[in-house]
Length: 476
Image (cartoon, rainbow, N blue to C red; front, top):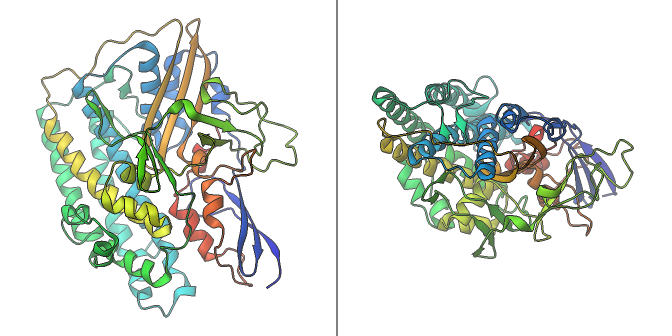
């Protein structure tokens, strides 16, 4: 087959704008270049404002993961002011954040990822009829069930946070509303209802059974629920070998508590977990339409290159850890945290691994949420003291549904002097760096099969969606 270039995009069922240029040779992708074509400029809006304004403005970066942005801003302000949340405040904040992450996970699986298997190109496959029945857009029975269950689950955010998205409930010193005994019972009731949805529809079995899977052989034997349907499809289409990324996975650790983060922080590579040092983060701009040199976010600037120099091809910077690209997301969190199935999947590294890692996290997160709700004590303090410093610097690291999110804040004269954000999709959809190393999705797309008549290759769609990009979070 002849060499050709193909521009794929915009992508439907992706939050925000995304274009990917493909170099195709011999019927497969030889090189990929991911472009975030929409510059938004949130980091340019914040300097000069009251530091507390970050709690209002940064959640507006995204309507899907606004609590993640809110929590990162609150932790950055807390770090700058030397504040700590009381235990009950941290529990409530984790419930708020965990519910949003759960809503993101089930939305991605049911509405963004699985509908691709309803394409006519898969007609004749043994599973295609079941995929149509469960996941056809606007008609699929699984999607309808999920939307109803998700709506009920999000009542928890309304109870604890007042509204969703863009709640202001999470503050540097805790949360603004202390739940009473009735609220605790309602939260536990809503979580029990959501467990029923997961066990009846998504897993078709107790969550603990899926969490208990410890090997790829165990996984291959899972046949129940929509998870089982996905695994059947993945086996038939060999999604295990499609879309392998760089093989390095980062997690900053999810859900900070006074006693430590609920899931471990670190970097997984080659079967070993090493410590995560945020000081090793550098944002490269060699292939981004950004001015200035490579810098740590605490010293970084956001200065768009209005000339759009030719060697650049994206508004997205290229964050690197210790000079290397890393993949972030649910699979990364679970592998770093030491779950044996997740670590086996991380070594596998493809589309099946990312989606199964997310399924594993859904099951584990539900169990965590139930535990946190049981530990709520309405008689305890949910907010501690916090004083806005006249000068200082802070870092807020959280785990959004799509991966590691960091906010870096500097305060001078009582105002924001600098504010930089590195979002999960900034990590995963970064362009090349000065050394020519591709970003994670660019690396994962190499080798994807592309038919002569395909202008939106289905293999590319599967790989891109397995990362669940949120492009509006990518360029600030």
